[in-house]
Image (cartoon, rainbow over the protein chains, first blue to last red):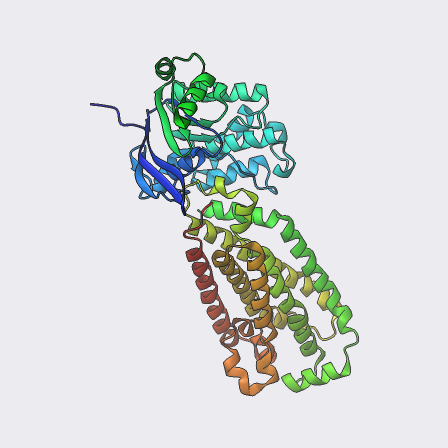
Length: 247
Length: 255
């Protein structure tokens, strides 16, 4: 018997009017893996992630997350998923602690559980000192930490992260990558790590999907893809894939 | 859900715009006795004709409802509710919140109820502060009648907030939503007392929800459940309907 995929995407397409943002994309993500989702800005990564959470309606194709069908069981998917968008703001009048409690309440978690998790996350992201300060005064890096903390408040089984390292300093970036590795290794969390920073993807992911101009141009094991294209680094692999597509 | 509603209410209460609204209400409370100190003779005569009563308390109630609180509920509900969900979308908060297990109509309903609750808090707060202040400053002030007369008005304020939220749910642009809300509520409130000026039109003005909020003005001497309950019940139903209509409007909205 084969293990069911944590995420199963088949022929996923999204059209905005005449513009195709995602064009027949097919890939799957295994449970407990950190999966790289690569592509330059505008390649369709964000739209794909948004479709997986039902934030953007699917034009055609199907997608399943932990066996649940996107569209029909969207709220169930959101219940077990954590999401950090690429572009977002946090409520300016709330404090970090208030915001985590608010998000915890959106999952209908008991108050005691939310308090416990919020404190642990504030500690993990080194936010305890600023936890009761309004979010309007937070720096980009601190905002990103609160954004990550809110994505983890429900102890998700699937974590969809869209450009999560942007805005983080080198130390914060290193800590985040360590955290994601630990989440996948110790708690079996499936992580989809969407980024155009190839070194981050290379450092974290064994398997990747590469999007280019709305289409999937590669999917599979990084080492296998490198060997297949006769390159040694992720940068070279990406360039090889894009040039091949352009030719 | 109750915990989330409570946290959302507290969050709305802490917003800067709420404090601005509170300051406006406080100004209204403090300024009315000053305005009432020397009312123009023609205004006094007109009010005596409309309500058949020349007591200073009747003049005060007319000024408090028409000059202060009706203006307040034309403006404050728009400030509190015309940007519901739209503000979160425009600021960029919505992509995070919409990814939680709460559908967009439910999130809208949550935010609209919070806005209504904050409006109610501000309204009740203003009446309570007014109760203390007016007792000392307004000759012939009747505290119990004042509170009873303002109760339907509270429900009108809640309806106005739900109505502003409903406009936001369908218009989906903050500026346009505020402008439409302000215009429509301004018109409804501008016509809310026409039934007192023109008794022949009394029954037709009752289709105006804002007239229901000021209905107690016509029966200040004998306010009881029979006078107060029907407008409150009607305004409650209208508020629920407004929020439900608004929630339907955001069904297909993208974060």
